[in-house]
Each structure stands twice: as C-alpha cells, then as structure tokens.
Length: 145
Image 1 (cartoon, rainbow, N blue to C red):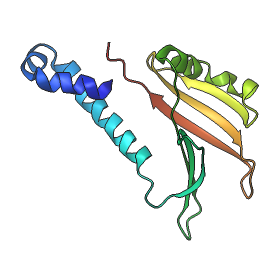
Image 2 (image 1 turned 90 degrees about the horizontal axis):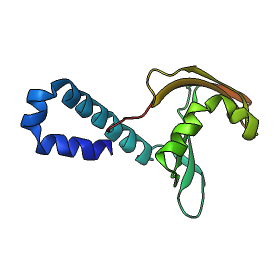
Image 3 (image 1 turned 135 degrees about the vertical axis):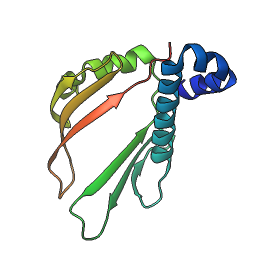
C-alpha cells in the first residue's frame, strides 16, 4: 500500500507539494523505508538457509561472520491475514508467551502511534549453542488512509 501511495504522490506531485507538503514528505520517507525492508528481506546473499517450507511462505536463514561474536537469524514469512488481524497481534504482543511455546516472556514498551510499537521478547532457541535470546524491536506500520 505504501508503494501505491508513493505512485499516487508522483502522479499528483503538484497537488501534494502545494497543499500537503508535510504528508508528501512523510509518504516519500515511509515508502523508501518500506522498499529498503522489502529488499533486505528478499536478499539472501551471504545467508545460509536453515529451513524453508514447501510453499516458500516461511524461511529461516542464518549468518555468522568468522571471528564475530554475533550470530544472525533472519526469518521471512508470508501471512494471509487482514490488516486488523495483524494489528491485533501487534497490539497484544505481550500475550504471545501464553500461546507460543518458544516465547518465554514478552512486553509492550510503547505505542508511539496506533500502527507502531516498541516491544521486548525473550525467545527459547531449541537448538544449541543458543539458549533463550532477548530482543527489543521497534516496528511501525504506515497508515495510508
């Protein structure tokens, strides 16, 4: 949707730049962010595929740079879900530990906007040498209405 909004912005540049300059700049910025995420998720160069289901809707990738203490895990998934369903999961992120056996704890840190959040999660890794790993993330959606 964000990329479609940017296309409309480009087609009607004069209108947006004159009357809605701040909105136009926000659309340009957020569309660029969306494109960067799409490109990063799609680029598997340097990553080892650990798992992929038959339909290619879910994949787990792993990367470790020799001599570096950080091990990276990237997960990619396609969900057939409505926007309200996805937002519901995000708004109830603190409950994931009640239904996901790999989550040992979760907390919502803040909701800067209705479609964004900052959250904490502690996940159990079922394979060694990893144990429980903590993550803090900032996620945001783009409301193009």
